[in-house]
Length: 64
Image (cartoon, rainbow, N blue to C red; front, side):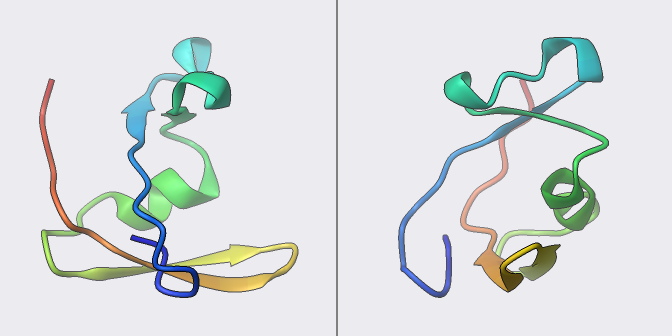
């Protein structure tokens, strides 16, 4: 969940070759994926973006 807008976002973390943001698939090497790796449900991930820092709360984790 984006803590600024409260939008709920769903992403699948994939390898570089499979990344496709239109289908919500983000590269494991992307800044947002790197911020999510190692986090647990309820944790907050901080991501530095060109527009400033963004905070996301992890609501659920599914392993596919």
